[in-house]
Image 1 (tube, rainbow, N blue to C red):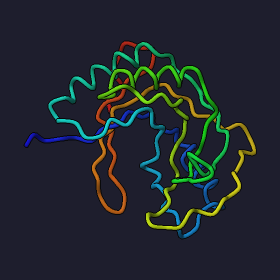
Image 2: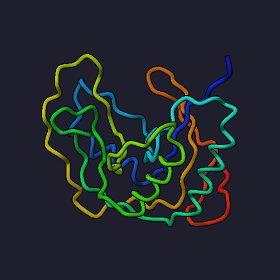
Image 3: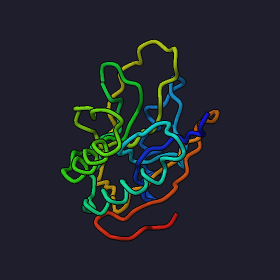
Length: 188
């Protein structure tokens, strides 16, 4: 059997944003939730999943080409809240306002990397902060935590991230990152 690798495409957080989001999550935490470790927080752009390890160079090439076609952008935090469906949430996320450059980037990535026709749902820019534990009753509705000031996430680069499943949390590492709108590689 060929070796496989589990990959996704994401953007890193600023050094200040992660601790701020952890603090905003605190009023929503209870024993039904598993908080995401700070080092695992990221802005997901496209989840690839398990692929043959021999395909990694093709993935890197496609992501690099797409990064060069898209411009840097800045996302504005809307709320820390249950999601993706408020009536049947699976997680607590930091949801950002829609942005046309995020939508363009996400669409290009899913079009180039999806093994079949990409999902037609509009992607929501977000950072997962906590997941509900499995086998719990429907989570209790929680009020959103709204930012008291402008909180932004500048996105200048995207990366090919590796996910190694482990307990209690997966281990993520950035294999390579690419500056948006630039013809150069940002080594990681």
